[in-house]
Structures are given as C-alpha cells and as structure tokens.
Length: 159
Image (cartoon, rainbow, N blue to C red; front, side, top):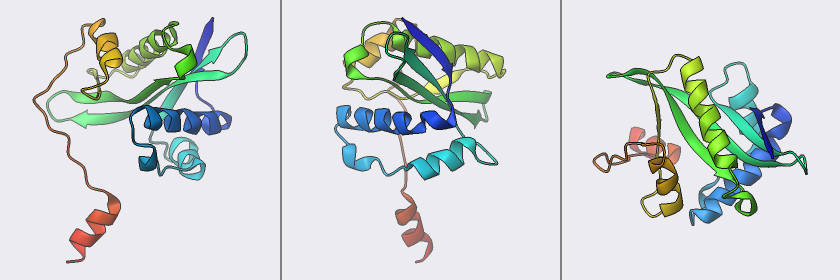
C-alpha cells in the first residue's frame, strides 16, 4: 500500500505542505516560518543538517507522510538520532504509513550507529502518545522544553 524511501529535493514542496498540515493540527499554523529555499539549503546544500523519509501511496503515487530527522549529541549517551516530525496526512492516518515511517527511522538510527532515538510529543496528542507507547517508548514528563527565537537572541545580545 505504501513505499517508504529517502526524501529527494523535488519532494520538498510536499514536505512543507505536510509540515503546515501538522502545524494546523497542533493549533499553531502561524508558527511555520520555514521556506522551501531554507529547506533546500539545509537539507541539500553543502552541509545538510536534516534528512527525511517519505511515505508514498502506491496507488496514487502521492507523498502522504514524512519523517524528518537530524543528529544530536548527548554528553551522556553520544550520537543520537532526533526525530523532529513524523506526519501522515489526515486522510491516510490509521492505515500503517506512520508505523512504516517510524520503523524506517529507527532503522536509520541503527544504520548510523546512534545510541538511540529521541523526539517530543505534545501532552494532549493522545493518538501519537498511544502510537509511541505501542513501541514501549519512555515518555519523560520531567524535562521542560526551552527555546529562544533568533529575534529574541539578537535583542538579548545587543543589550
């Protein structure tokens, strides 16, 4: 029903559409400021900083899901694969594409000799939480996520 493959440059317009669909689902569409140009540079430029897999519906040939990842370094664990987003378009959810994408991403973790894989899930996203629990994932409610936007950083450093 689905084919999972490495993402290609020409897939990026559909990838960005799915990212925007996820943002709507997560009630934050205004937060997406990424562009195709940035994604091309960051994923396919001289120093790519992310990779991705796509799920293609074998009947329609259309990309219906993505798994976007990058590498991070843990001082405690070493090289880790970070799953930034896994998205399956709403009409295709529950048909196994998410499992195929997640399984392929876990395999990438092993292929790249990572010590493990990490990701985040919103505490209200019950379908995703239940999906990850099926894998025996550890859900850690102890850590607090922190971030600063580049505009905030500029303001702080210019004081």
